[in-house]
Image (cartoon, rainbow, N blue to C red; front, side, top):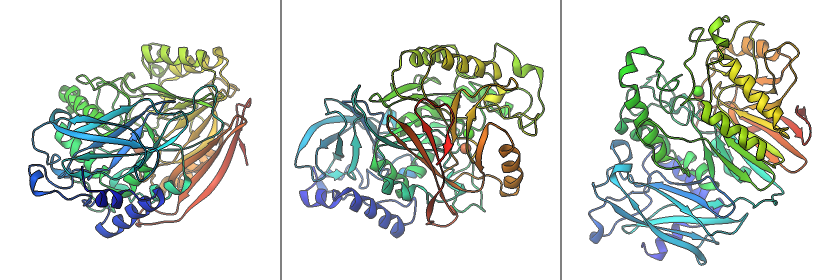
Amino acid sequence: MGDSGEIQAQGPSRRAFVGGALTAAATVGLGGKSAWATVGDARARVPAGMFSLGVASGDPDADSVVLWTRLAPDPLNGGGMPPIDVSVHWEVAEDERFRRVVRHGTASARPAWGHSVHVTVAGLRHDRWYWYRFLSEGQVSPVARARTAPARPRGDALRFLFASCQNWQAGFYTAWAHAPAEEPDLVVHLGDYIYEGGISASAPRQNNSGEIFTLADYRNRYALYKGDLLLQAAHAMCPWVVTWDDHEVANNYTGLVPQNPAGAATFAARRAAAYQAWWEHQPVRLPKPVGPDLQIYRRVHWGRLATFHVLDTRQYRSDQVCGEGLGPDCAERSDPTRTMLGTKQERWLGRGLARSEATFEVLANQVVMTSMPIGGALRSPDQWDGYPVARTRLLDQLRAAGTTNPVVLTGDIHASGVGVVVDEAPDAPAVATELVGTSITSSFDPALADIAEQLIGDLPQIEWVNARQRGYVRCDVTADELVAQYRLVDTVRELTSPIATATTWTVEAGNVAPHAT
Ligand code: FE
Ligand code: CA
């Protein structure tokens, strides 16, 4: 254990901690190595700086939460740990100075899992904030906040942020810099947490390597992202609930089919590497992956207020048809054997919706769900529009379950949108609200913003659209309403940028559609 002076230096108030992280970001440069800890002579076998990737918490329930870290003193070069198991002590306290430690224990960081640590801390009180930290080999991690969810039937208020698409090379995490000041209870990340691509010399900041394929590659890419102190501060403020989209493996893949046919023979191995690295770097309450498979769809309950049905629309889906991009319809699109969620996940979702008693049923989804015929005819084959029969089955499940207040959260398209989910039939009724968040950084081609906003905005199911700005969505939920504020920054090409609410929409309990506030 480090000396108390060092621990105190790491454990000021939450605001001071976040501020300190931001100052450090400015000092060393984003993505630079942090220098959290020193190491004594007796500990020389483990290098200093083991906690360079920060800490995180996630997947809370009413009496437990998952704590995460990964030991990586040389983060961009395989981590830099010796090939041995390392004991990591963890502490959970009711106060930021760790005078009232309520839970503690020891976990093992193993080379086979990238020296990552996942601890499910149980026996906590409902609906409470805690502070946590890790200690190992004389080094101490940053201090961060985690919390539990309220127990059913309680739960009066929830503030969550949702976000997606944080391509490193597209810009700086200027939006994440503002997230701690929102004081959220939860962050829901809808995927494209990393991107697999190579180096673009003209980007605002560069990737660490060419396109990634191996476990070592994916680990180093996560380490690049996790080294960003603004992202670390966003993880330190509250638990996250994380799902994935395509770029955690490769652009527009489906199941075991890569977009590039040349990679088909090796794609299962690539997906296995990518899924393992995802598991190693996320604070998830999930068993370790087995080969190329990892079931990540799951539910997170916030008392009786909200249930999050966290979806996986990549691992089980049928391959895209009707071409690669936005294009005309084709007969294969309506093949009833095509699936988006896979049979098992579909059944799981239907059962969960039927049983749930939450006021708001939130679907943590990836790609746009509502029917969106651009110009009246063109469909995007990677979205739910490419899987219309599967979408009809899902909307039928929502109706059959008599689901109250279904709200679909969507990422993927790097543009903001507010609307309702409708099927393709003419005059199809609205079944759910859909809130499409923009990206944290990832680009929407500015040359296409005007035409995209016009064509999407013309659709009667779309109430509001913005293809120009990056950011996240803040949702305040009570038993009466869900209020969504689109929090957008001016730019991600500078280190800092002001944030503002571009628009606010309210979903009242009992109403399917949102209204402008
Ligand atoms: Fe994306
Ligand atoms: Ca995507």
